[in-house]
Length: 387
Image (cartoon, rainbow, N blue to C red):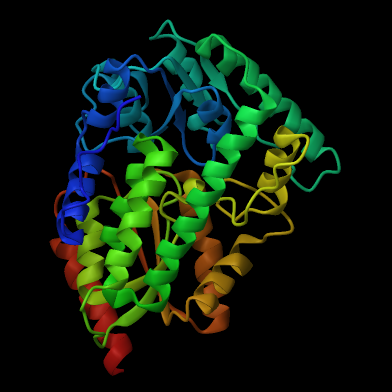
């Protein structure tokens, strides 16, 4: 398959970041179009976590469906007005032909998303599947159950690919993704340890572009970009270190992240956490699917859509703030997002109990005016710095 990104090796890091931002914000998803034009097939998968290794091992492109900053003129008619924007814009890019898929996979992560595959399936001829991740990950049967779900998914993917996924191909794909997650950990380490070198919106575009290109190509980009970022000449400024929470599913506009970066250092976040959900290298072994399942249960981060008694979300957020040496948190949620808004209550109580200051807000992916948020955030940070 052809390379999907334009040549960046002779660019400055700033120009390469602009290229990535343009791709991330382009509602026509040109890299996906380029893949299809070369004869490739595409499997779209909805937020939050998806075992992309299975799709990659079949020679298909796993495409992270995360909505877009467009008006869902067609998608709006398929959902109630009280539902989150990402459902409508995700369907819109398919109905409008911006993205053509060969298969779509969703997950019952909330009451709204549990119906997404059914709605999608009524409008397209290609398979629309639901991947049922375990509702009780603490059950002794969870690993075996999830391994069976992954095997079922693999069989459906094989039908699209027209060939069997071999164990060696799956191991090779897992090796690529292990490297990708290691590079993303390096990216976040730069943001945590030297945040003046990498703003939150810059880190985001380097992360997000990986959801629309093969991971081998994303690895090449990150391997090139990380030394360039470390070599920047920026100097530290007197800014508050913050953790951003609330970007696990619907994504905030890049301009909102840029606004936050003007007043603070975001040293950790949960933006597109599904791409970083596995926190360690996955063992390859004799049964790669079993190892993928175990990694989801035992080597993973947290999110409001997984209910794991071993990873209480309030405790995990406090750990995240402490590990990042952050002085405060932005507790955000997408409008009409039931899991995100529910967790705001639990998070703020935990932060109150620990005496950690926080800023609560909402966003929508199609927001365009940030004047009010900018004033509120600036006031919040000034109170922290000069109180």
